[in-house]
Each structure stands twice: as C-alpha cells, then as structure tokens.
Image (cartoon, rainbow, N blue to C red; front, side, top):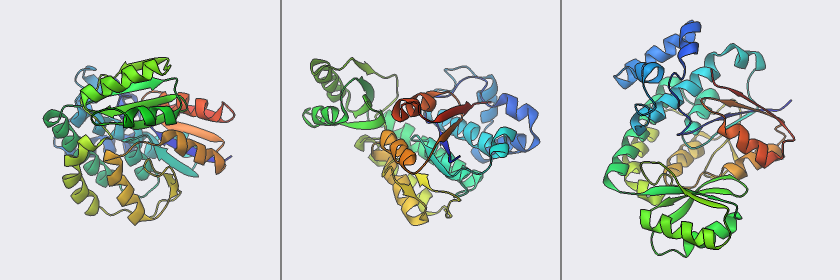
Length: 298
C-alpha cells in the first residue's frame, strides 16, 4: 500500500473541532496549549466552544485548521498505526500541515508561518476588495479562456477536480466571468462567501511579510515527497519548497494535477486529516474511485 496523506484548507472548520483529541490525548493537549502560547490568545476556546461565526475570521480560521489537522497527524493513534506517509499534499493552507506532518517544519514554526499568512491575508481582504466563485461543469481550458477574456483581474484560483474550478479576482470581473461561464454551458457559477480574492495577484501585498517569515524559517528535507500546489510535482528540496510556499499565495492551487501525479506515482490509499471531507470527495472524482479513501477529523 502506498499511502498519501492530504490536508484540507480554509472553509473546512466547524465548532468543536479538535476538542475530543484535546480531552483524550496528553501529547495533543500539550500541542494545543503550545499553540495558545504561540498565538498569544486561547484559540482553543474559539475552536472548542465558539460559534461558526467566531471561526470565520481568516486570522482564526487558518491557524485553527492548521492546528487541528497537524495535531491529528502527529498524535492520533490511528495515524500512528498506519505509519509514515509515502507522500503528502495539502490544499492551500493545508500545505503547511502537510509540511509539518512530513517533518519539513516543526509544529511551532509552521504555526507561526500560518499566523503571519492569515494576518497578512486578512489585511489584504480589508484593504483590497475581491471575491471568488465556483464554476461547475466546464473544462479547465474553457474557464482559463473566459478569465483571460474578461476586462479586469480574474484568474483560476483552485483547480479542484475535472469540471470544478474556483476563480478569484475583482468582484466585477468575477461576476463577468460567471455570466460568460453560464453562457458557455456551465452547470453552475456560484459566488462564494469569502472575504477576499485568495490565490490571486490581489494578495500580492501579503507577500512581503510572509516572504520574510518563510526566509527566516528552517525547512528541512521532508521524510517523503510533498506535492506542492504551485507545481503539482513531488518536491523534497528545502529551497524549492520555500520558493513554492511563497508563490502559492498569489498562484492557483493545482489540486487536480497534484492528485493525478500522486496517482501516477503509485498512491493507492488516501487519508484526509483535518476537519471536513471535501478532499475525500475531490480525490474520489479525480481517481474515479479506484483507490481507498478515508478521513480522520476527530
């Protein structure tokens, strides 16, 4: 069995996330408390007892999902029983959990990076209006062409699976692209309830502080390849990982291509670690259901 561990991104959060693990595992509790100390506020109070609205702020959402996913990978007995992954990948924010799980970064260093990323992205959202939308039922190349033909800034941001792309950019251009997609035969073109234009050039101002933080962080060679969002290829070189981690901020998440490359490299068992089950559904569609897919969220 060739094991691929995958980690979800923003949007998978839910009230109560991580609480059972905190209460049942001493090592997990230690990491949760370490996270509170690093962040300077008790994010566990928000994760365990807050509302869905409390969890929506980017500066809370991103570290909360990272903490939950990574603590599961490092502490859950079911993961320990399965052993070390043969490859890892994370969707957007999930890439940081993947790197920590693969030993490329410590939990503490990865959380610090995630918090810088979340804080800077929230600043961008507040200063530079933008939005995102899901386009369902068109080939990738058609969506690419539609975005290129719009007047303002709009680009494909997430290649989630064949026939499902999220676009990102200026609100008027995203709306224009949605109308053109419907006219081209898209089954659906749905605006998303997000606070900004993630994975687009509108996140460019966040690169300065995140770049400094990444450069100052020690990244080691991971214990297995990580399929990074920017290239969709297996990476193990720390310098390349750093470069791609920063580029990811303003570049598309090539999830479809990443999973296809993992399958081509022999992955026949996928385990989603973290809140929700979105990645399980995407891997099933991409693989045609020919592999074993499981999830662990508590």
